[in-house]
Picture 1 (tube, rainbow, N blue to C red):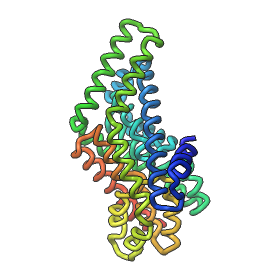
Picture 2 (picture 1 turned 90 degrees about the horizontal axis):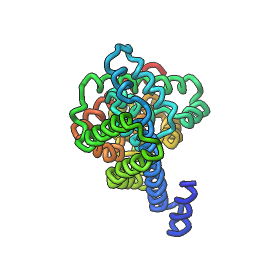
Picture 3 (picture 1 turned 45 degrees about the horizontal axis):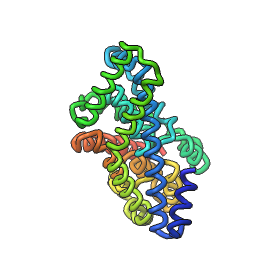
Picture 4 (picture 1 turned 45 degrees about the vertical axis):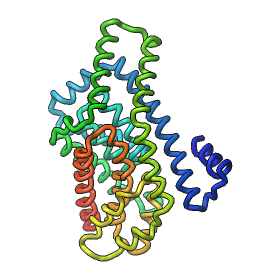
Amino acid sequence: MIQTFADWLVYGLFGLSPASRWGSAVNFFFYDAIKITILLFLISVVMGIINAYFPIERLRNYLTSRKLYGLEYLLAALFGAITPFCSCSSIPLFIGFVKGGIPLGVTFSFLITSPLVNEVAVAMFAGTFGWKITGIYIVSGVVMGMLGGWVLGRMKLDRMLTPWVRQIQAQSEAETVQWAEDKVPFLKRLPTIIRDAWGIVRGVSIYILIGIGIGAGIHGFVPDAFFAQWMGRDNWYAVPVSVLLAVPMYANAAGIVPVVQVFVTKGISIGTALSFMMAVVGLSLPEATLLKKVMTWKLIGIFFGVVAAIIILSGYLFNWLI
């Protein structure tokens, strides 16, 4: 429905051509802006309801006070794998987790895995590269989410969350305690939940528009051949170069699989191509812009650095195994 509206608005009302760079970029912008705004609002409402009725403090204490031997990171990574979100679409749920007080490392496991693995990309991978490579892709995505979340969790980075996040965390906890004590009926809580959700949307809206604008420009005006010429060289630094070139890109896993197929047919090694794909969907300038409302630039840099390092190591491992 959103795509149909975006097509009508851009190609019908504005009169832009679907084949033109401007048409592709503007359509991308309106589609993602509407989709992510609606998604952020709905998830914020759902998380508000969960925070109101579910003992989030008990869950938080359970995750932080018990030795789960990595199970919490596995569960977060698996949940990320089954949610069909791109990197920017995952951020609303990430905000919801942070708002609920879920440990930051566990939340990072979800944020890393969610864009890397989804059912559409799995189906396309299976049809394009076969089940062996598809299996490696799925397992590696989950393992990368677990490893990245564990490393980031061990670094104790909560202090680098922005004051805005800390404020909504404190507000959420206070409302949950107050409602529990007063036993406020759901219908009386709902207006507050909706108001808080809309406040979150307003708080990050400018970052959403800027981030998606960057992604739309890259989507419409940067040709795939620009990246292929650098990745195709047979040298030891092809993997890190492919990751660096991927960061300015913005696409979901399903959208980048055909590009990876083209790269492989042009002689680029599968590990290098997979590294490029994972960096495109897991790290992007639009994602960094959206995260700025939630994290300090230092924390964003640490997050990108850890994930990029894991992707690069995985790329070398893929080239060795395949």
